[in-house]
Length: 94
Image 1 (cartoon, rainbow, N blue to C red):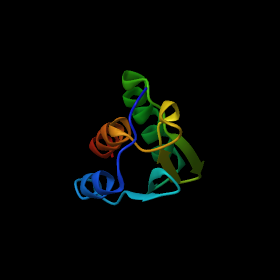
Image 2 (image 1 turned 90 degrees about the horizontal axis):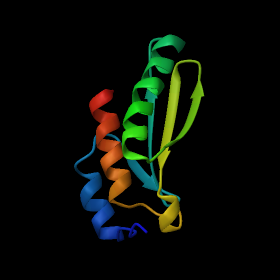
Image 3 (image 1 turned 180 degrees about the horizontal axis):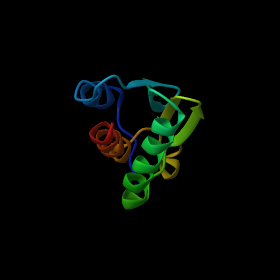
């Protein structure tokens, strides 16, 4: 079972990420692309990162916009180091 991070740990780790926020016990970030094809390509790319880590984001897609949220189910839906690891990987892809 993964251990939830404290408020302090989350705040410190958020400073290392670009444009991610924390609310409702999850990390969140929205992306906007030139068109639908680019948005779908991004989702496919991050799916490889998620599968590699066996940790999957919640994904919302509408035309050229993609919104992601991350939390860890086996930590009671709280934010863990796994979420920050995937968020960093997603930022490298974007």
